[in-house]
Image (cartoon, rainbow, N blue to C red; front, side):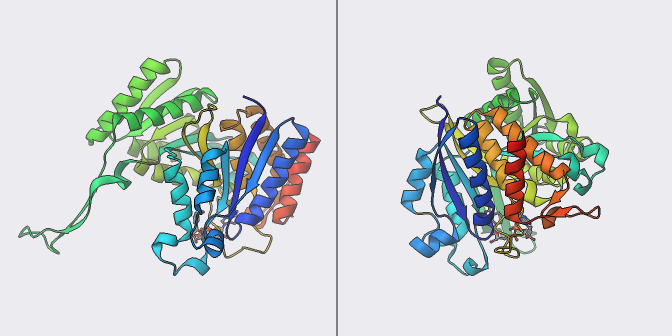
Length: 373
Ligand code: NAD
């Protein structure tokens, strides 16, 4: 692999362009100072794409996304688009990207920076230094399984006369590919995977457990693997989250567990994510990186947004798409130092105070911390 990377930047709507402008400063810094060459292109997604093209993701943008090493997205949506037909809503642009790139592994790190440990709803001693990664299967399971629907159910003793159906369905192939992603990720971190399901009450859970174990035994015997029922997993996440390194779980449980884990770390403005697909011809996985937060229309255009979630999403791109783990760690350390110095966007301002900064000042501070080494 060369040190040259193609990156498609889709700022989107609301605070998306504001936070992405700060990421661009970071990309430029790594380009100028760490011998990496980025081929960066910009395009539209969400409401901004709808305004220009009448669709939330143009075909040309989709084709570009398929061709680059990594896509970095800001956020989509906003009140201006609330009344649009479902088929052209801003979120459909994001869903199209995920679906057509077949991004089956959703990565949500929960990392607690020391300086922000008091923002967690849990005690400092439980979360300080926390660094876990939840890998959620994203393209199958009960959100997609057939049959589904709401039907009449005239069985005499059914008050209301209807039935709602969703189907939890997983193939062994779907489980094996997300398990492989989790084991690969664990090897770059703490070398531990905990797989969560409900094998005690669900056949799909039994299959999940068996297939994850199969991938482990046949392909990753040196990674430590444990299994846990997802309800116990939820409890353990709030009791002692630091026991985990990588958690791999299905779409439904992952949806819930990753939101719970997110709150261990405090602010929405701090949470990055990645969605990965199958490896491309160059060995890099199809990949989309984005902050967990939305377009925050309530603060858009005011310089109040915290760009760190988007900046940490780029750190994930460095680590998982570009194999630049040291550069990713360098960026994370720079963020940590700026926070330790008490530099705060409004969302991070706690009772102990700090130095209030705007979105772009936060970006500048992080660049300065990188430069200071
Ligand atoms: P939101 O995440 O945009 O905002 C929730 C709250 O968190 C708001 O008070 C907001 O000001 C604050 N916040 C969010 N990001 C922040 C940041 N970086 N810095 C400081 N504060 C931040 O969620 P919402 O208000 O429910 O949704 C707003 C719009 O975003 C909707 O149109 C929704 O559909 C869309 N949305 C998009 C995505 C996405 O693009 N992936 C995700 C969630 C919501």
